[in-house]
Length: 140
Image 1 (cartoon, rainbow, N blue to C red):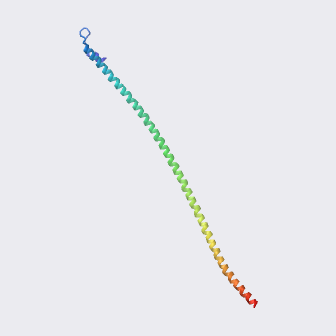
Image 2: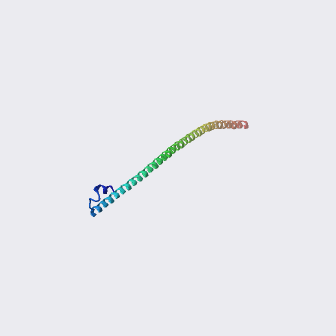
Image 3: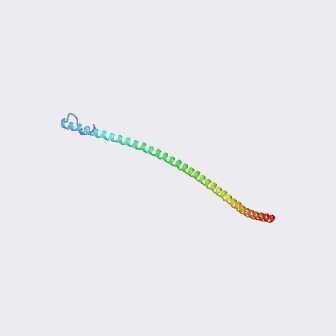
């Protein structure tokens, strides 16, 4: 509208209406309004994209925070589980060492008893030989 007013600055009586000029003015106004509408639509689209990106960024930030929390929880649970496994492993090693010590002590006792048995067998054999000798002497 302003374009038409700028072009026509003299009163109606003093100007002659040229149909071609009028059509050109209307075309120019149409193109200006079309350009304005297109710019408004582009601005609306850009605003929409801006809102979508903002919401996507907020969603990504929330997901990142959730992932960080989940990772920290996983690490804490993993450390706890590893500590429990290490403690169980140490306990099993202590129990094994204790059993080994018990077995060594029992093996030592068995060796001592076997040694005493061998001594007693030797003494028994000697006493048996003496008995046989004495019995042989008494028979004669």
